[in-house]
Length: 355
Length: 181
Image 1 (tube, rainbow over the protein chains, first blue to last red):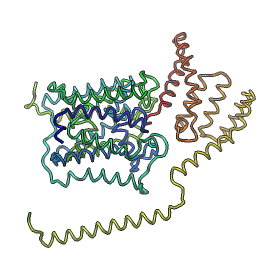
Image 2 (image 1 turned 180 degrees about the vertical axis):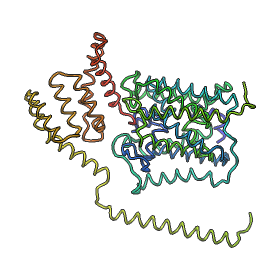
Image 3 (image 1 turned 90 degrees about the vertical axis):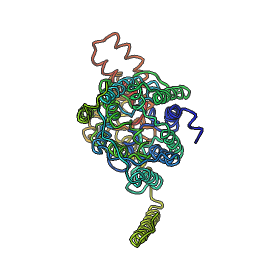
Image 4 (image 1 turned 45 degrees about the vertical axis):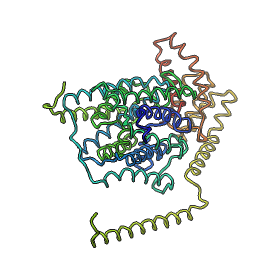
C-alpha cells in the first residue's frame, strides 16, 4: 500500500469514478447512470420490497462494493475507527431529504458529473444548484454551525454495515422469495454482476483512502481554498467526458438526454438541497456509504435515511420523470430545504463564529 | 485477555448452536424450495409470457382497425377503434392504434401526442427487452418531427399546438434515450 501514498489518491478515485461509471453504462447499466447512488438505493429499496415498482427493483452490486471495499481497505490500513452518536435522527432525515432532492434532479452528484460529461446540458443547472448549496453550507460552517462531536463506540457497531453488505450480496446471489428482482425497465439494465462488484470494490477502496467526496471537494475549496478533493471531482468529470467521447456516448445538448427533464429551476433547488444537507452531514451520498464502511455509525444512520428516502421517493411518486418533477417532488424539495435551514440555524453556536 | 468464565462459555455454546441451527434451517429450506421449483418457470419467463400474451391479444383485438387503416378507410377504422376502446377501456394499445391512424391521416402532432400517452401508460413500449417494444417506429416519427417542427415553430412562434408537439417530441426523444426511469 506504500505506493498509494506517493500518488494523489483523490485524483485516481475521481478518474475511476468517472470512467467506471461510463464503462458500467456501456456494459449494461442504464444510460448516463453507470454509477448513481440515489438510483441504486431506489433499486435496493425495491428489491427489499420497500416500494412496489418492480421495474426499479435490483440489488446493485456496486453499492455492496463501495461499502465492502471501504471496509477492507480501512481494516488493512488500520483506519477502521468506530465512532458515532452525533445527532442520529437529524442525520437520518438529512439523508432522507438528500435522496428526495436527488430523485427530483434524477441522480446523485456522481451521476450529475456523468450526465454533464456525456454532454447532458440539463445537468448545468444541477451543478449550479449543488455549488450554491455547498457554498451556503460552508457559510454556515464559518458562522459556527456544526453537528455535535461524535465519540468512540464499541467495534461491533462498525461491523454492522459491512455485514449487511455481505447479506445483500448473499440475497443477490441466492434470490430468496422475499427479494424482488425486476426483469424489465431500469432494473433489467445491468452490467455483469462480477464486473459491477469488482468496480465497486476498487472504487470503494480508493475512496476510503482518498476521502473523495463531491460536495466535500467543493466545500473544502470554499472554506480553505484546498483543492485536493476538488481535483478528484474534476478528474471524475474529465474522465467521464473523455470516456464518453471515446466510446461514442457523448451527445451534447438539452434534448433527447436519458432520464432528464427541462425544469431547470427545480433541478437547481433540488441540488441546492443536496449540497446544503450534504455539507451538514459531512459528505455526499457516495461518501456516506464509504464512511459507513469504515466504521462511521453516523454515516450508517444517514445511509439508512437515504434508503428510506429512496423507498418513499418511489412509493409516493416524488421522483421526476422525463416529463418533469411531480407536485409531490416539488413539495419534498421545499420541505427538505426548510428542514435543512432549521437544522443549520438550530446548531449554530454564535460564540464560535468565524469570519 | 481475561480467561472466560462459565457465563462466557455458556454464551459461546448457545451462539454456536444458534448459528448451526439457523444455517441448517436455511440450507434445508433452500433445498426444498429448489426441489419444488425444478421445472417451474422463473419470474422472468412468466413476465415474458405475459408480454407475449398481451401482444397476441392486442393484435387480435385491433386487427379490424389495422386492416381498415391499411385499406385507407381511416374514418371507418377510427369508428371501429372507438367501439373497441369503449368495450375494453384502459388498454394502452388503443393509443398506439390512434397514433398510427393519425399518421395515416397525415396528423404528425396527433400521432406524437398519442405515442406519448401510450408510453406514459405502458413504459414497456420503449423497453427493448420486452416484446412490446415499438421504439423504432417512434424513433422514425421523432426523426421526421425534428426535421419539420422546429422550422414550423420558427415560422409560427405563437402557435401553441406546434409548441406543445415539439415539447412532446423532446419528451419522446428523452424516453427513447433510456436511463433509469
